[in-house]
Image (cartoon, rainbow, N blue to C red; front, side, top):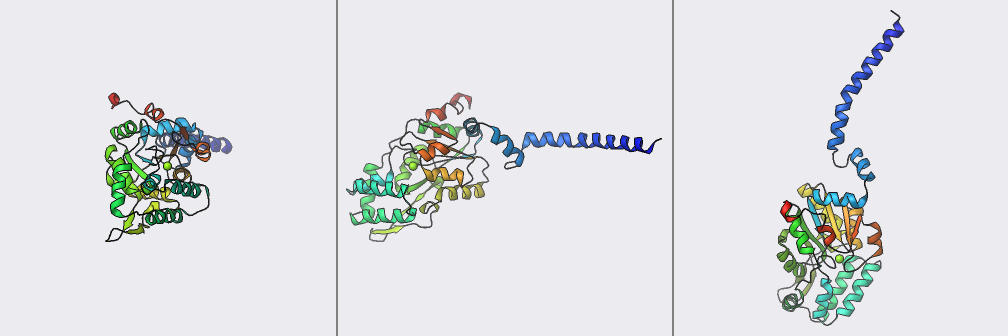
Length: 281
Ligand SMILES: [Mg+2]
């Protein structure tokens, strides 16, 4: 027999063997597609971002909500300012901080000091939380959180605002206290203002991506979603491990957020329409 024909036959046989061996492996890989694998990235990048986010909503293991102007229609720090007669000044400083190059922690220190100068003590702040801290809910938010809980998703509140304004909100949403990541105002033994907890991840710029990275490490979450109205919320997706970002424009619309969100909504009804109905669970 011609040695060339023999060699060709062998080559063909080994090629079929290779195909027979690799095809099932490729098929399994395609079906399973581990998180972050190049193949998963290829398939996900082909999907429409809105449809992808809607799909992820049903598969997500943890959703992180911003609070001010997202879960509620108000800004907590402005409400505290109102109690001490300086709502307008605080609002202006907040606006300046959001649009300027001021460090988050410096802007917060400035506003809190201003409130302390206008009489904020521990006791007066507690009174303020009782009068101004009654949550003004964004329509549909309670139902969204309830449905996420029902489908077994962990729900977190992540805010650059303050624990004492957020606790009553979390309580009504049945979100445990350990699932709140926010800032804490400190007082000395006499109840006078003594700064804020600078160890809290949300007390500095880049706080939200930091919280998500922390929770991914601690809990091993694979499909985290961030929902919020601000650029710092968007950062959880652009600079953090969130798989999708839903921009909420029901209170205020920010162009950067609208442009970069995977899905931009103006009503939580849009999320409710995607989640399984109560009877399906
Ligand atoms: Mg907000």
